[in-house]
Image 1 (cartoon, rainbow, N blue to C red):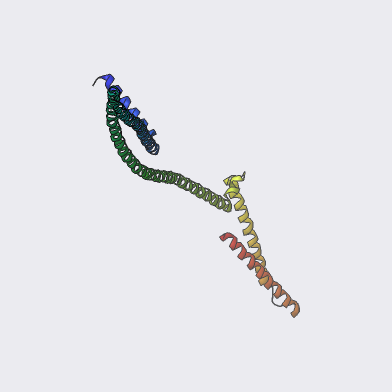
Image 2: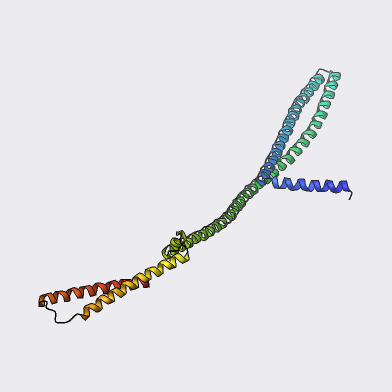
Length: 274
């Protein structure tokens, strides 16, 4: 196969493929059905034309038959009048007309045979057209059903892909939300631990440790003072000249002071533990 032949073959193949994709089977079926109906109409017109020609020949035959009868009567009359010459001429015309009638009968018979064949062909074509119409409607229904099914399948496939994209988007949103929640929890934890205050403060580590030592020293000094006061109170002589009522009042006051001190110590311990 030469280069040009191969190129022509490839072009025809490509063109045929494009035409197949562009072809709508339902339109092709409808077109074929219309073509068959047109052929049926042509056959019917042919039958009508044959019938018309046959009727014309039959009318012509009847006129000739009438002339034959007329010439026969003329010949009879001429014989009765002893005019053999006229009788001979009348019989000659009668013979001519009878020959024409015989030819017309042959033509009429041929036309009748053609008409009968065309009628049979017309009936057969009409039967095939009806069968084709039934098959055509069935094929169109199947094609539409297959087309609808294909459309639904394509829609389901596209929807599945969209759902997959939506699912991935939801997963990314959940991951981002979890990251934001974890970040917020970490910020709250740092805020509660005071890390933000340390960061925001201008003091360095040494300053904060010195302040802590100063605070601890003040607490220790105050604690020693309290211990001294409590020891002096226990060392006073029991022979106080105060009245029994005053002694009871002092005892109540000392109990209340002792309870206050113990409560303050408990609070301090709770703060240290915290």
